[in-house]
Length: 268
Image (cartoon, rainbow, N blue to C red; front, side):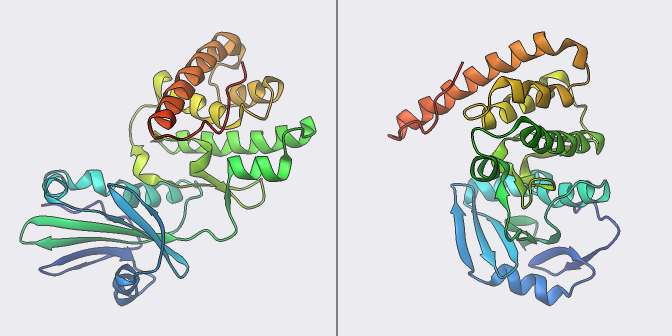
């Protein structure tokens, strides 16, 4: 079974029970030690648990029998964050520094995996940053500078030959409002064409992140800056508005099913 593509700067350790791909600038013992530490749990989902261990973030797959079968048959699906991190950094896109990717094995079975990357201290999602620092009634120049910087960072992802399928504000972090880092790299695909359908999905996600507290006078130029055909922004925005309403309706339906109140209301 072939391993993930090994970019320059990556070392590999293999044993009967482990395969570890790690930053060659560090020691293998450090990578394995970090993965074994319990750390501070940050998030738990049916598929994975995420924890902080010192200055590192560890995302570890939660495995059961179906998960073992999937990891064994399609291991590349679970290596996406590792591959994306190295690819994007090589193309100038800011992402947390990847330290290691580990697979636990018995014979040819992949029992589990873990991805270790840098923990971004002092960062907030762009949604939280905009809400807390810029506020709902910013000066147009300040809001535009923030959003144009974000738009340029997002175009850098496209230029790197990558597509992030969940490009909502919660998956883009910033510390100062001018530099942006991409997270949730499991959702990144490499070497796929950035189709109009993919671009529309991203624009809907981003518009939905900000439309509750910023008017279209601010948001339309933001979307236009990311558009390959800015001269036709009006018909494109109608598709974005329609997609955002549908996205918000789906989200609020899930909230109602889970017994949660909608935290934001769509403003037409």
